[in-house]
Image 1 (cartoon, helix red, strand yellow):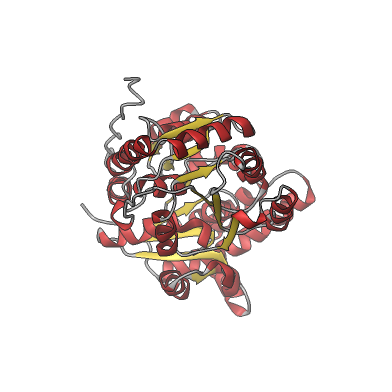
Image 2 (image 1 turned 30 degrees about the vertical axis):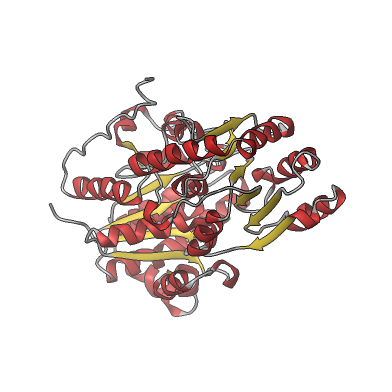
Length: 416
């Protein structure tokens, strides 16, 4: 079966907080795909946290940079020679724009970018365009597909895309895409609320994944908590700090390491000082995949108290490292954290969070069993090589006008 030459597009690639896309690209290349990586914006230096990312950044096509100068004009002149396609793409940009002058203006900007991207894809002889995230960059992908005739698909994550589904016209994108990769059953069900029913059979479940071999299980015999993620309001870090304050007397050796950065860092630091926890907390900033893996060998419990998530890859990494996880019972998270691999708590409940952390800190034997269970789940259902192979089969099947195989149901789907 012929493997299509792929292009991957997202708003900013590569980026420290989206290493799962980089892993997916690498796995597809290992399977024999040519993959041209494209990014709307140029990644900020703070997000390039290792030699792998810097090398990937260097080889990535930056759309906005390419829009400068004559290339933008020449790209549009190229498609003006195909007036039917050009007119349809322009009409699509106008028709799918959010309401208001600002929404129209933004979609016309995306149309301008789409011509530059489409021109690049045709020059590189790309035969399929894939997008991650499904917001503005997916709008560019949809318009570039209409201009060039190159089919596109996208991976939808959530949760924020489902906060404004009409703004981002995920109904139109799902209808026009060759297929959609949904990261969980929950994510697929949310898209089904908006995608026309006749397209439901093209909504496939493809998990994000990790390589378990990169993570070495360690003794996990101390009192060390680890959080990895953006320091933003949605991640619920203040709830974690309150839980730590509640545990301060009962667990005097308790420590927390925060890997990541974001708009709430200063506020979180201030709250830690207010609660008298600043000497127990280490802010690490963004770290490379290898550095996160190393931090997991020092962690005893991984905590992610988010208010909204898709299926967090950081939980997969922790489980692959055989670290028990404490996280919130939201969205697709229960599809990953089950079978005793950790504890799910109500979002925003500091007391429940403290109780769950206490259980794992106080029961080393249970920690080891949970770690083994978590690693087994990741190896069986969230291995990047397996998920990339499934995604590759979708690319190949749709490129060759074949009916793709349906993903086998996992135990949770069977309600065993």
